[in-house]
Length: 184
Image (cartoon, rainbow, N blue to C red; front, side, top):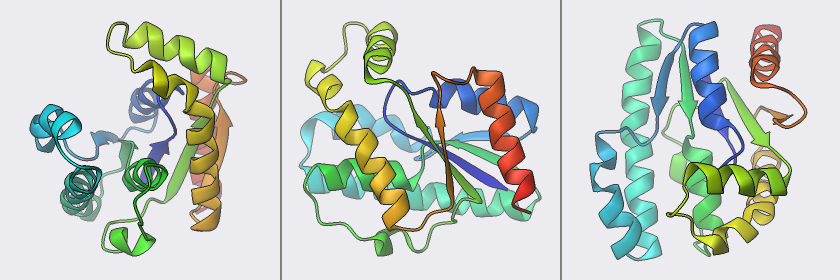
């Protein structure tokens, strides 16, 4: 079982991923892996959009190898972001990307797309990253949420959509667990 949590910043991915990992229980991973992200600050600030995409796509491919190994060992995995984030953000940035770029990666059993009211989302982002927030990105969160939704539908990715404002974290976790167990 591989569950990927997706959505814009401040929608509750980290909170829900930790809770799911405890409740299921499952291994909590991020993709790209933390070791891969040692170069993240340099990449995020000093490379072209194409190089940025290549870095993150390659990190996802590397993480997928680790994921495949863990799944073969019978582990259950929760991912705080996966390939859909890389796909969505870079496509919004103007790159021409196809789903074939990720055809070799292990696909999630279920993608959980999280959303929240944009005002609440902005407040969460500002609270979490005060001082480091790119205020221009706050106004793009509605566009980002719409792009995630369009992409899961266009790419026919098995997903559920949860509004984290309407459901507290424990209830969100129960919704995900029920969705995964009922799809077996």
